[in-house]
Length: 343
Ligand code: SAM
Ligand code: SF4
Ligand code: SF4
Image (cartoon, rainbow, N blue to C red; front, top):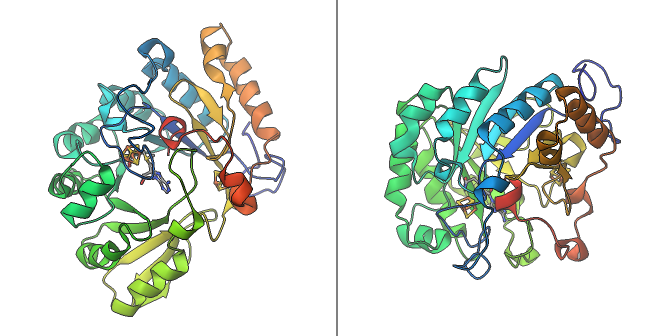
């Protein structure tokens, strides 16, 4: 049995007919960066209370849930956080997940530890990696990560990932107006022809600490027209239904880029994603204000069948479509932070 329709049918999944296909797992709420749009220092300072060890899911608990989700139709798991590579021995979790057949296993990282870890991640069974990088300009990059981390180290990480076969490497760049919009064209030029796929992300109103304003969003339309003016582009068809990035290719054949327009072009209609927080709460939307406690089931003696049923019941009631109904009012809601819920 799967949760939601089989690929070829249109039987109902959640309340809007969307099947459950994609699970993001936040393996830690901690991070060695303080990106201004995600974990601003004013909110995530020295006194910030991160989760304690006993509160966070163990690797065994995550792997058990992953197997149950797989039975429910999940095809892909993305490990994220916080910064997933700061969780000690995350390779052991990857080894456990890599044993689940027919599962696309990937990870999103800030790249800071990738030069050191690319090979061991690959050996553990990771297939691909997405690296976040917001500028090639060292001054801009250091200002955005706000911990004075140099851009060269991330570039080394990207090369190490490609050399280890974690490819194609996807590069995610969040664009914030007046902060790094001037970095877009240099990024496009740098990664063109490299085989890595650069994706521009509209700055979103995740969580409630980043002080998001619509004026700070550089829209997908603006992004495409700025790149197109320098390096001509043409649209590409999506790889599959529900792909979040809109694809464009350079007219001279030197590669493709993507734009994730979650603010100006909502893709809730095809959203098959769910998120498991570091302490085992299930969130059916990135912008959710509450989650469902799976850890209580795991630690309270529930059987796999009980948990499977519980997940199915949660999914069948899902009505989330935050990006379609975003407004000045919703931006101010007390939403869960992205570093905790899993980006
Ligand atoms: N630490 C890892 C990293 O930075 O890649 C994984 C977690 S991070 C929360 C996942 C992704 O969310 C990153 O690509 C990051 O740039 C993106 N992100 C964080 N805050 C965002 C925001 N306000 N708007 C858009 N994307 C955001
Ligand atoms: Fe850390 Fe990633 Fe958030 Fe930056 S975007 S603060 S690297 S979790
Ligand atoms: Fe999915 Fe929620 Fe994002 Fe819409 S806003 S695409 S429902 S995670």
